[in-house]
Image 1 (cartoon, helix red, strand yellow):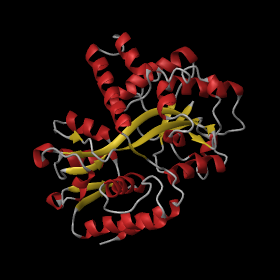
Image 2 (image 1 turned 180 degrees about the vertical axis):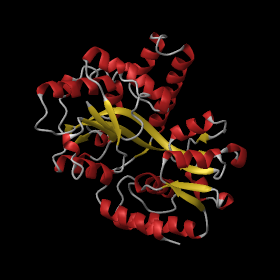
Image 3 (image 1 turned 90 degrees about the horizontal axis):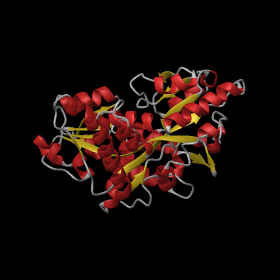
Image 4 (image 1 turned 90 degrees about the vertical axis):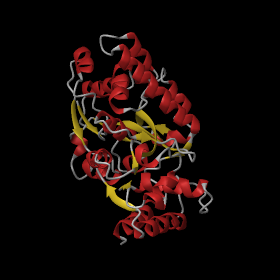
Length: 353
């Protein structure tokens, strides 16, 4: 089985808990999370003949379905699906999160990870922070870093402007062309004053910015804070009053008419495994994300796989992310209605001097 992964779905290279019972090995290949990049891998790169599953940040079913690249999921073939209360609570049809796994009423992705993003900061330099406004505060001019991504930086900025009544934005998750322009104009104005030290584009770069203390405030993913802490830096992941950027990873079955029935069964078995307790607990522990309801119970009940301290950490992370979903915010939109405008305006922001 070959699985394309967006960068956080690797359980430390150990797939033995799946391979042992099924006899199928798993080869994991990093393919990134950028929507255009994933489309290129599957179309131009011949990925439909290579990958059985792609596990990436969800929400881009529209281009994948319209390009005939993924299969609808038969959830009845996934025993763990019906047990997953997070799917029912956050990702069911009619809920905003459904857009991360479904399209036009059909389910296409298995949610392997759920998370709410905000920003990281160094309290030794800034004191406590609780607003995205910190990224734009002149007090931290030259010590702020943003992610090179319009679906994260752009949407968090829109949420900040909306909640602070600094701009008229109806829905930060799906802005009109004029609303997008307003957000980018705001970011360009800040950029021209020297507010942003750098626009980062990789996990390692972002962690280094924190550990070197080159920046004090950074639009970031929570695992970057975990990584910085492991290197002895007291970084904090903020609980912003404006809310979180909520999202989910989705594991899609790649459409391949030449796939045998046996391979198809193996793909479903791998998907179900990724919705199960061991895999969920492993990813929660190593990445800091909420995965599935079985993770906490599995870690607690299996000390041979997870020490008592690790089980406690899994439970704490799960509770922390659940709190984010209860706090709310805005769901990340990977394929907004005016996606071409988003891309063009983001390019304008990056080019501004």
